[in-house]
Structure formats: structure tokens, C-alpha cells
Length: 100
Image (cartoon, rainbow, N blue to C red; front, side, top):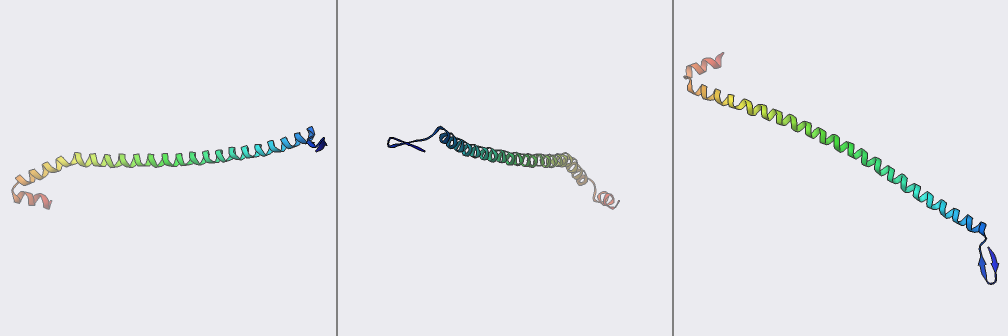
């Protein structure tokens, strides 16, 4: 710094150097924030993929359960009819059916 009548004068070169240093620090800060944001985005994408995979698995499991439930419900009336039919048969006929 140069002195000029009781106050300091900063040369253009010194001012430029200081501004470049400040800009460099700002650039580093911004680059770090960008990297942190990219890292966060990547983690969110991974979590989204995991969540979608879990949701797909839950849908598949639900479909299997509902398919089995429908099959059992469709089978039930024939089981009920068979019970009613067996109830109307004489006991000797029922025993013969069970032995075979």
C-alpha cells in the first residue's frame, strides 16, 4: 500500500490480487456446494430406486396373495356343495367314499 496525504491508497495491482483471492475463495465454496448437491442427488436417486424396488415387490406379493385368495374363494362353493351332498348321503355310502 502506498500512503497519500494521511490515508492509504491501494495500488491497482494489489486490489486486483485481493479481488482474485476473494473470487477464488468464492469459487471454491460454490464448487463445494455443487459437489455436495450432486452427492445428495445421487443418494436420493439410490433411495428412490430402492423404494421403487420395495414397492414393486409389495405389489407382486399382494397380487400373489389376492390370486390365492380368489382361488380359495372360487374353490369354496364347490367344497360347500360337496359337504351338503355328503350330508344327504347315507352314512354307509359316506364311509365307502372315505375308504376309497
